[in-house]
Picture 1 (cartoon, rainbow, N blue to C red):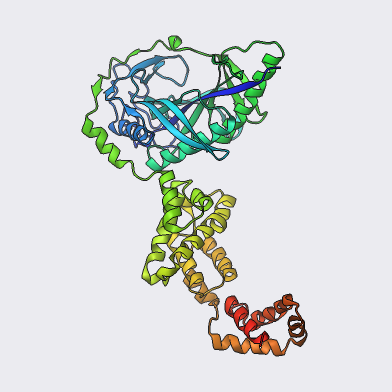
Picture 2 (spheres, rainbow, N blue to C red; picture 1 turned 90 degrees about the vertical axis):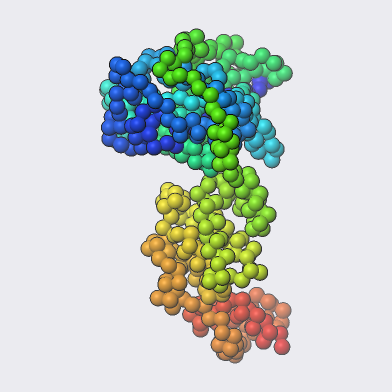
Length: 493
């Protein structure tokens, strides 16, 4: 049985973040009533003429610049012919050659090693409509047609066949999604169909230069699902070849419930689509000034932001990676940090690094756990960035203990309340008055002769009983650090 290597190429379709469709003024809003966002252009009525959306071109060029592409100044469109119920024109307006962007690259990290994945192109095209096969979980014995999506702008990114494992595909898509979300050129919401992927998978004997027979897995809308589909398809192809069979070039679908790919149809080639120049859209050239203005808009991307978080805020690589993994999380963190920098927050300059790390921990643990449990985006977090900063400020100032902070946070999350108000109303302010704590410690020592004797005989754990008594006397509000310091001084004298 031969040893095989995996070869994967990805075709990623991302819905461009514009208010209107790419060739008409219909709304591109998701979730509208079926067929409510349509007109004579996107439903292809006789004589309707498409008009190019400038914002869509800007989004594709901006994405290309962020991914080190060469921008082709000549902008042309073609008709890609195919016949399917959700394509009202029976062709798709797309770009053949040249695309807007050629020859890009994206660095990914897999197993601690960097790999550069070359990307062949990004081109602009329109989306098809949508066939509805079930309503409310009930499968229909007929199909319904919704043309709201027809004519929405897409950018299609096509990699070179250089991805060699399911994990590499997963890391590529995660990194790409993050960058595009940072650029705000696409929302990349896979749940809403705003990022979809066709996956080309083949295998070949190790050392062979020629590619094996390619199979396309169509319309994947889950990054983890893409990884699983590649894993299954590679094993399926190995079994076919090792049993003496032959693979056929075909299009398959991923069945997420059965966790297998299923044959759909034989794979079309470029000749089947019969591309020819789009007669209703005249070719034109992008001005240098247009491209350079967009280049200025490509600001700090995820990797650069991660490096800055580690350098400026003293964060670990793990914390910085988590915080910059989604732009909204990174923005939330820096918004909170800016509140902590304010002198009114009570955080002194020398405490800034501690504040930065403490804030990172609260976001990556307590807040993240709550959001994940309720499947809520940080954009809709009940705890505002300002209120979380106030909570961290109370902890760092010694106004409340870490344990108290968790109680306060629970109410903040439930009621979207200001932490200072909660602390005041519930009387949770931490006791940091040294004279008051000294008195409680003296009382606890005199009331715990056995624990004191055990401590002095070398059983240091015995001090826990004395600390517990002090905390009981203070109703849990004594500053734990001060309690520990004062007791150690008294017990060692």
